[in-house]
Image 1 (cartoon, rainbow, N blue to C red):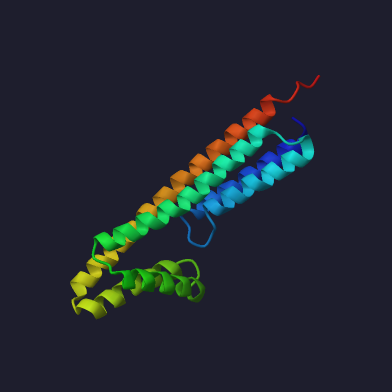
Image 2: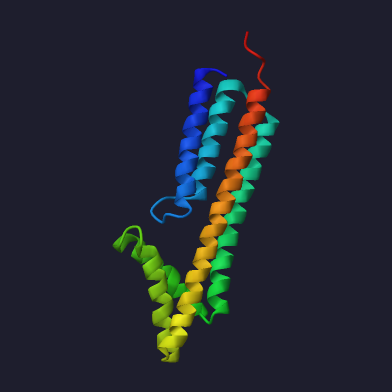
Length: 176
């Protein structure tokens, strides 16, 4: 393995680790950054050593994990919200206030805005703060499960990339 290839691998790993941290820290991108690092690694290796079907297969698999992960986490969070009594109006308010909160209060604003959105809509609808709090708590659990799912998917994406790197390194002729 030449020094350039080692540098590409280490830089990709560093970006992926930031992405993995981003699955649990709201200020950083998560599995999207892991995917982007894999794409950059693929392009760099294709430019350096040529195109291989194995690398295309790995990139397609990592992309499938990204799309599946995004759909799964959205579904988990919204299902938990609805199962604990949040209405579709509360879910929409959660999304809107979460987006606003992300810009108003960096790092924690998205979560605070999302929870405030559910609570306000459900309190307005029912006029019972305990029911509004129950829907809000369920939504929070859903987001927690979604974060856990994102972390696991990020680890799997990095594992697939690790297999890709191993296959690339083992397919190279021995130096000597």
